[in-house]
Length: 301
Image (tube, rainbow, N blue to C red; front, side, top):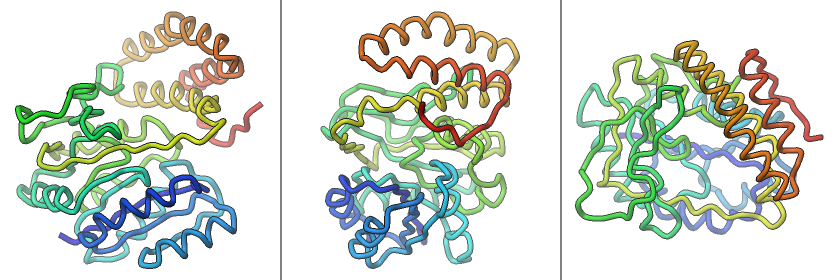
């Protein structure tokens, strides 16, 4: 299979060395590698161009979030009729050529298989983040085998309903049939929405233990707790996706649970963490989700 891999980035200076090291491990299995700048500083653009000399580098003038940036790369990949499948891979994912070959074989083994993914591990290379995911009754995610230790008794494949958004491989025809990612979601719950559509279109979604990957996230000093807007998008998008695919009762139950039970717990946590503005964005996301507001241009207060 001819694989087009897409990686998105936005001034991620701190991951460049690790990212380059990881890409060297799998680049020979790729037909092409597309990097999408989701807006970038000029010096960062130059750094990317000098580091990834064999990659196709695309530059966005506006921040499209995860979904917009990935769609820029997917559109570029689909322009080439020789591309058979598209792999989304975050710049902090470690995966070997052997694992990519295993994914290709699985994806190509049955016409009904539309998307595949490896086991996703923590950076310790042994604790499972997800071996496939299921969609819950409120359109959330249940990560299978989460926090279990990698072992020889795991099944070879798991039929599932969703795959990690930053590490999956999807047949070209799937994108051509169901469309790209929903850019109104910006970031968070985007994989929920996309893979619900994949499953509703009749495609099988499979994770395999024959392929392994690790999420080797690097936190930058002073930014680990600076994720106020993340709480907005997490709450808003979960409600938007729930409203789109699930019942009114499921949506109402999700809203009430997030507003009262989880809202109180998180508010206390935010106050103890001395990040009270997260409370504002937490509840704003809930309100906008219920009302169907899709404003992706919020600026932190």
